[in-house]
Image (cartoon, rainbow, N blue to C red; front, side):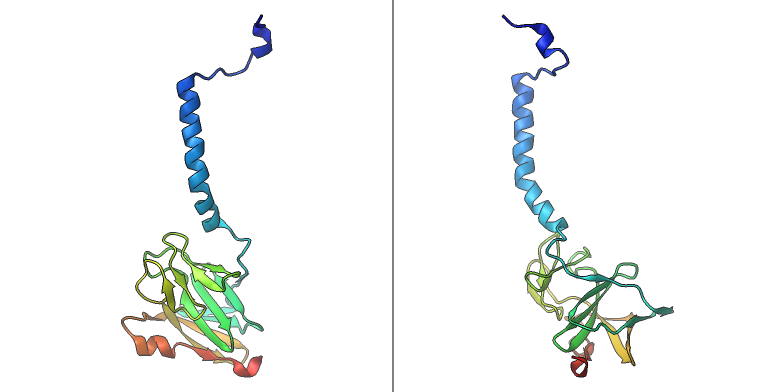
Length: 173
């Protein structure tokens, strides 16, 4: 007692297509959560910034008033003010150059590609990377922070330079 008009326009699916689509859905359900975590900005608290001035490799930024993470996406620079100290980092993970993300709930950086994690000072915590985040030379002039994009310190190649690429802002809190 089937009425063909009731199903008019309905796509009929055979068993093979039904099982294939079910397998695709099951795969999507297992892959999508990790992709969603990599793209999730809900736990991310950072400020997008632009330099006040650019003079060759020198980029000047306003001194952040409080602890947090500033990202200049145009220059691939991360500026961190954390517990009285400031750092400037390359935005790329040192493992395979994927843009790092700040996880505000965990208070650390995370690479969405291979899940390496870093403390706010750039120190490696865990994952596939083998060293800390690359620091850039940083100094202060009045209420500005100057980042020298031409001076990069890799923790494993120049540990003294890496350790010295910090700026104290204790008096600002």
